[in-house]
Image (cartoon, rainbow, N blue to C red):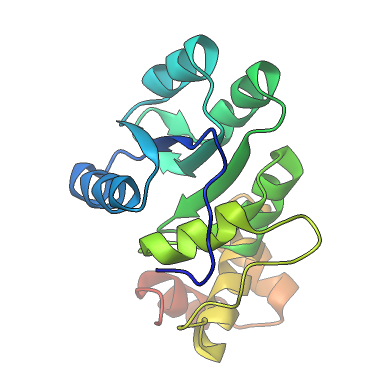
Length: 182
């Protein structure tokens, strides 16, 4: 459990994730730490909660079967301007993080994030940042993330990405075909 954390009076929390086991585990862990959790698996369900009973906090997955968690950020902020939002993703890359923060999220965590990391991000004040994660990305992972970002910005065009990265096309294809390093 994070050091010296105290929940505000309104500790309602929305969790949006289409991975049901992860959503259930995270919801249970945050409930055990005092949050009042509403856990849903679709953008439509999350938008309904955001409109009818906007929470003080939200933890939203970026990539879902029915769209992108960023679609819920606007609805949350329209109905509750002080809602603190943390974005989660299993496909983290720098471009997604920038998009999430520009949309209004206060932090961005790679999955699987544990409950303490989520709480630290949600409860960090504006002046201070959440403490760094216990397991930061390796240099290999940062390199992979950069390649993925450029690949995404080049609209998944391998030849253009290779040219911009000054890399041989076949080398890039090999890198893209592998799983992300830890």
